[in-house]
Each structure stands twice: as C-alpha cells, then as structure tokens.
Image (cartoon, rainbow, N blue to C red; front, side, top):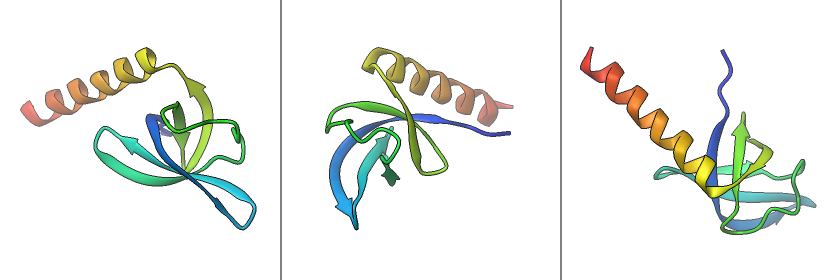
Length: 79
C-alpha cells in the first residue's frame, strides 16, 4: 500500500539545481524534492509521496487529512 501525506513547506533550498524543501508533517520534518512542483513556496502545502511533492493542496484540505491520520492512529492504539 502506498501512502501520500500532506505537509507544510517551512524552508526551500537548491541542491545542485534541484528545488528542495524541508516539509513539516504534523511535527515531523523531512527533506522533500520539489522537482515536480518547483513553484511551491514557504507556507504552501503539498501532498508528498516517497520524498517527492506530487500535488499542491490547500491548507484546509491538508489539515483535515492530518486530523484524519491522527484519528486513525488513536483508533489503532486503542485496539
């Protein structure tokens, strides 16, 4: 099963010509490649899969998805 997760871009930089970002996933920060979405800016949200931003998403949708992930995790822990 593949999972794509929304995250907020908190830093941008260039790595040998490749646009990169530090993305915050509900408190966890990871490096993400922006080669598919080079116009994303700090503060934007993106759906990320295996280290690549694959789709831009608005803040409301991103926060709703993150809340659902939290609920799923809580349900899993309670069982």
